[in-house]
Length: 186
Image (cartoon, rainbow, N blue to C red):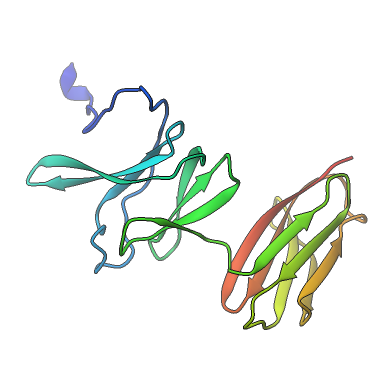
């Protein structure tokens, strides 16, 4: 009955690695040397590898080691760009596809600060090419609960009027977008 199963094209020992985080095949820019390569990571070692098929043989290559991240998931946008999330760092990185590396996918100069036990969220924009920020707070179903637009470098959002729960703060700025999860306790 072995014809019923498709066996793995690649396996690796689990020492020091411990947990495979499956990824995606890169389908972004066709000029990238990684076009058509499958990206995957290991949660414990925070290493990323690629796999590609060469004449029927699967070739594994080291993409890089990024200690302390604890990669837990990959994502893909509509343009085929890849992202990887570091559970331990709380950062979503964009996989750089013209060289080896990852870059924070957060627009440069944006800081979101939610003080512990506070219902105030401060958004600081330290970008020297500053323009207007558009802010949208949505619930987990995607319903928009609050929108604002500001030309100031700092904005304070008070979530006191919203019930306890999980929300998403979307910040649009200079053609970029950042989505930040907001949790309001009881």
